Image 1 (spheres, rainbow, N blue to C red):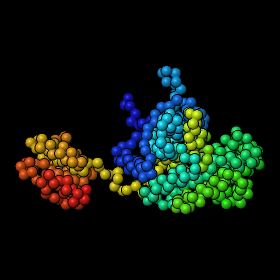
Image 2 (image 1 turned 90 degrees about the vertical axis):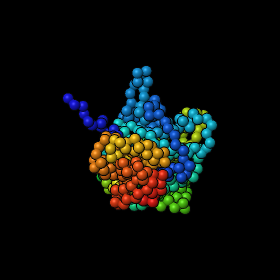
Image 3 (image 1 turned 180 degrees about the horizontal axis):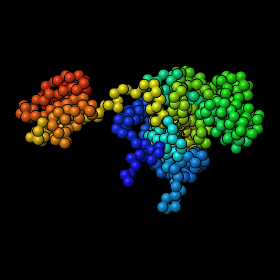
Image 4 (image 1 turned 60 degrees about the horizontal axis):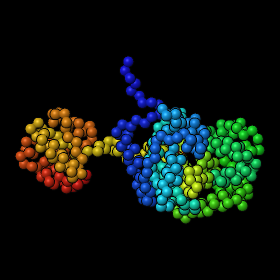
Length: 434
Ligand code: HAM
């Protein structure tokens, strides 16, 4: 029996056309991070299970992960996210220049039900600032996010940056008599509000939270409209978490981050968040999931060392971002068809092969990417291959070219032909628009 041609459920398998789109997205993200001086780093894919049990939360570490015991009897996990590893690296590094501004593109693994925008193996973009206690870090992170979305020509209305604060949510709940355990449960319920139809969520809320007055509080909090909602401002007027949010809202306004707004229902699912939490939502109907999630985590590095270091950052799903961009037609049309080779070098007969091979190497030395016939096909087949691969320029090497040292560059898009001596091919290509 033939082996299955399908990869494991939820695992990534990107053919070159799809990978080209992903590379484009990754390039844009890297460019946005670099504009603020973020440096790239790498952490291991395989980690001790304890690292994630301790801080990410039991649901993610146990139920939603690939975890196993290795041959040495160690309990391991394929990382479901990067942040605990980042915190460990910062704690272990010793001499770092603060603030640390790091970005990374980790592959992450979560054992969950696969659906649109949810895979079991997925690429994330992580960007974190460590060692800044004030809101300036959050502001810079929001500026990066807005720059990313601007870079793709996305406009507010297609997406929204929504933020709230874990401290605000804890404050509201503790004023209403929630125990720490009930609070954890309440966060999980609030987190799901936008992920299911409202009626279903309300029914579920009253099932999960047995005390009806507490359920009522969750309902009021999760549905309050804006920071100035009278219920919220009355309850929390004196609370520092509330003043912090008012100040942050002001900072965002002054910095022109128009796409961001307060949304009480944002709590994010991870246990380590301690302050402001946020997400980027696709506000169109088709992709209901968040493109990006993040927040402040002030106690994570302290788990590994006596010296605590505060942190704030986000993880952005490349797959969810790609679906968003596709929905709004924000991926350049020709991307999937853009072949990396600039020139296809067609060879007339075997007599010219050595000459063509030398020329190809000289062009590659000059940073021109060249694909050459390797299969001794006839000329018309070589032209067909160049066309199917969408390589824009074709140069034929026949006896005349070998004798004269002149070649003709054919632009397959426009039909233009330029005859040029070999040392000037680069200039000719620039003039032809490459
Ligand atoms: P998260 O909210 O768990 O945060 O994930 C961040 C983003 O990763 C999500 O908004 C989503 O776009 C993407 N994502 C998550 N799970 C999947 C999946 N199964 N398939 C495809 N995409 C997915 C974190 O991971 C935090 N560590 C982020 C962070 C960094 N917080 C501070 N620094």
